[in-house]
Length: 207
Image (cartoon, rainbow, N blue to C red; front, top):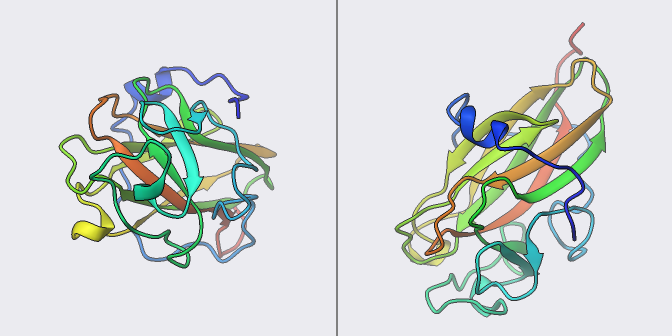
């Protein structure tokens, strides 16, 4: 799947420290606008700058149920299930050498002057990573936050972690949602994404 929006390095380098949002435990209660956030429909419903298929090289991904059995997986990759049920699909990613390629991207329709919650679950897939992924979230070309993943996989003492960001639509009628990996190292820097959601946040609209 090819990326449909040209993202520039301004948003991934110059404002990396603008906001860092850590793990959270709650998310918006509205309808999820993301089409295939749990990846149960396979490789569809999103765009990406990464190549689909064998994940032995940087900038690649696949959709599968277990990182250890992904095509091209390394011996130290997690023997673990997805976040949703433990048996469903997830996006399994080998981080790219470029921070400007979206790992995952989707454009959704939004209501102006409304607060939204962007949530996703992520996990390191290397048993122990010496170069962890640093995931950055952008909406409509602006950075809204970033986070570093734990350095151990769920089958080696780590866990799936939920990251949540809030955004106000202002005058926008659409939201170009994107996740980037800021780490450009080739070794390690491997991870999984699951249960991505974007929904209206509870509470009154902003005037």
